Length: 449
Image 1 (cartoon, helix red, strand yellow):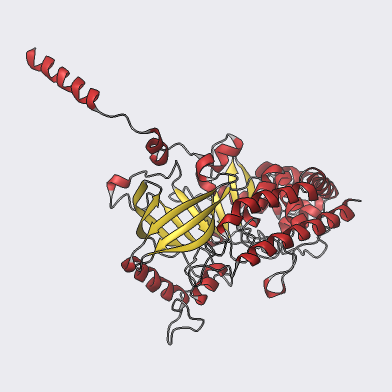
Image 2 (cartoon, one colour):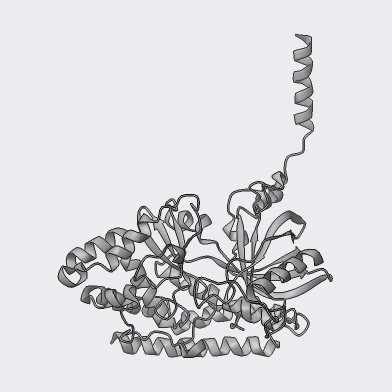
């Protein structure tokens, strides 16, 4: 009896002496996603990443294998042949390796974090140019099997962050602006935020410039924006004419080899009912795919102009299963707000008469009078309520005031650790974007007359 009483007293003493966890620490390392902190609307966050020389060497070796090029070289390594990819779009075949890194934010530090390069054409171009401002991912529990103390490690409730350097966008606003416009139009889209990134590649901490953090589709996006549980998430490389397993990379549920939802969608889309029994075709398609959500996406995408998307290329979108219905999620938007792009590609016109049957999800839907009328009405609503010159100019001015202090001569990105040549190019890019938006608004008004 005495021993039990003594033990109880000892435990009470221990718990009474324990200091409660600091709320800021609980938030930083906790599992509840803090969108306001990780993806603020009008603030710039800062992260420092320590890779070290050994890990940077591993990354270089892996990229030399994948691209047959050394960092900073546009010529291939003699005798080297990159591995085969899934298609002609694979400038960097496969996913680069993860290495261990530490991540510091203010007084908080995350150890044994997975760091890997990401991207395709932009990653390849930046690698050839020898610029350290590379797109990358942070996976906070990537090495939990090796280091049990990092099991379920989170960054303000998030398992993963995707960091992109706004390649080809010196305004640094397009990704964030367009995802904002999609959500206002009722289209699922990732949250985006501005981050200043410092990286130690083994030669001391270097400022690698302004990045944009992009939310991971499969983590919290669906439940946050719809209140529903996420199902399968696919990152396709497909024009959706036929089902080929390798063209539909799963982002979750990878241990379950069930692709029945995507197979049902492609079968319904391309079914002969479209010709002989249109109402049955539409009913079956809408049972497995959010058609109106996609038409709203088209209305926004065609208004702003985006040549780097479905209708020209087979990538830059996700398909997400929500309650058995697949939803379209646009992605990788740094080359939007442009009517012309690489390899003579052009953004789609409002009428989309140029789109051929090899892009069935556009051609087949737009050929239906009811669907086309809904699409046109969506363009009208978008340009009259959201994409007005006044609202867009206010947005650009507000975000320019947020970003401008980080593009002064003292803070400008410097080669080879950055990509923006001077502060004037940032200012001019914002001016050009404002002018372009006014031109697209006028074009949309002509279309909806």
